[in-house]
Image (cartoon, rainbow, N blue to C red; front, side, top):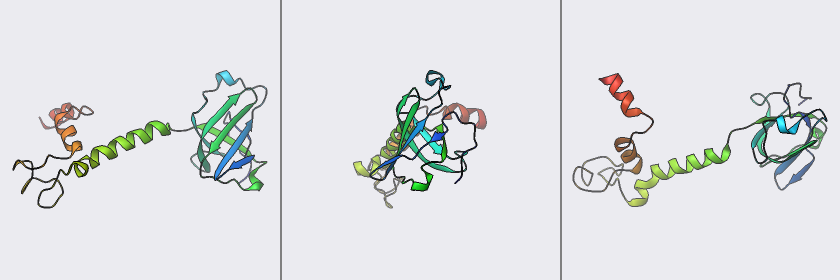
Length: 165
């Protein structure tokens, strides 16, 4: 990789130290950068790349420190080769990984709730009605099914009424 030519505000030298399999990027910010005007906050998720985060992303990390003249980013699961130490890097705002992981965990729990409760034990064990199914007074349907059919999730009910009728 070469030197970054993007116009990102967080472009500077990086790849200084490593902890376990994490890379620590220390961005040295120019004196002209007003840290208060940057849209970065401590513990934000950021993407480090040479030129463009969609093209040559090195990794996603967490902004550990942001103060006048320095920004420190830790990227888990990334080892920066020594020759990258003096390259220019770009730092962009990343997705909110905490929110994403919580939503994913909630969805996984909803989808797996039937298995945990022993529900969905019809003839095929797939939650279908039939022998031992809901229609026969057997086990309950999966939690995700109950949520989608009884709740007004994402305005799906209003959309279905407009489209079908």
